[in-house]
Each structure stands twice: as structure tokens, then as C-alpha cells.
Image 1 (cartoon, rainbow, N blue to C red):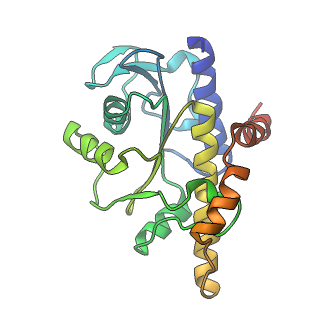
Image 2 (image 1 turned 45 degrees about the vertical axis):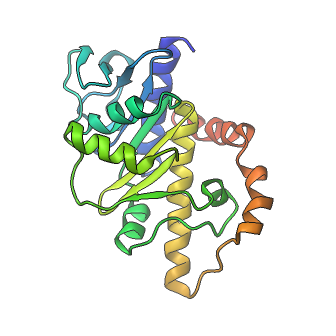
Length: 224
């Protein structure tokens, strides 16, 4: 993918996350520059204000290579996930309300509706209460994520890592939707979560790229 398209996808994803109430003043989406250990990252500002001309370039060791602004102090989340996971092409860190509530209850996402099945039972939990502002904490986050694609940071937010910016954006939205339904179900009674056998049936039906592409098409139309 061309660099300009990567930048535009970061801008669009940032604006979607703001428009959908997933991010306000804080949060960030990045994209690896293909075939490198460098990535495109927003400056220290609301996702609503991200533009192509204010994006920065950083590397996995935390060095800023281009751009005039200052990166968000939690750039270490992105840098060290990219370092640990050469397969990851995009990372998102935001603070979705229902995900934060769910984590505070000592829970992780447990699928109980169709879109939530995309996570199976693989959402990891980073338990320490802290912002991720050092290389060491970034490495700890990457270790907790392991070979999975999603994680809750207790009392803090979520990290999502995947094959491209568009997929990462949609997965982040679906993660908050799943957490919202789960919290509501828990408050109403005893949720009936999908069994492993049920997940094997529904997962292939909701996890394909054509499904997330359709979601991206809709959400991106809301911010054009």
C-alpha cells in the first residue's frame, strides 16, 4: 500500500473512532511502513484533529524520524508491539468506556453476540495500573498480547493489533460493542455466553475480511 494511502487510512480511522465515541481527547492509531521497523504515528492531539500533514514517523526503538510535532507519550505501545510482532501492520490504543468498565469488573470479553465471536475467548488482560510510557512497559504489553490481536488494559483502555489500519479500526469498534453488550447482560442477569462449539460455527461467518470491509465502508462514510 502506498504511504499516502496509509496516512489517509490513519486519518480516517482516527476520525471514525472519535465520531463513534471511542476516543475523545486521547487515543491513537498507527501503521507500520511495509517491510520496515518504522511506523506512522499521530502527534500529541485528539484523534479528531489528526491530518495527513501532521503525522510523524517513529521506529521501534522509540526514535522520531520525521514530523514536527511531539508523539503521544504512549508511543511505546506501538513501537514494542511492532518490534515483537513483525506480522502486525497496524496498532490502535484507545479508552472505550464499556471496555474499561468490563476490565474493572475483573472480566475480559466473552462472546455472547455474533460480532463478538470474532474475538473468540482470546482477549488478553494487562493488569498493572499504569500508563505505558517506557520501553520496559511497552515490552510487557507486547508480551501480554503474545500472538493474539486484542487486549484490555485494566482501568485504562484497549490495544488492538492486526493486518491493516482498516481492520484494526473495525475490530476496535466491535470490541467496544461486545463489551457494551456484555456489561448490559451482566447487569440484567446471567449471560449465556457462546460455547466453544458455538464459536466454531459462528466464527467463520463473522471473521472474514469482506465483513470488516463492509463495516469500514459504512463507518468511513460517516466521516467523509
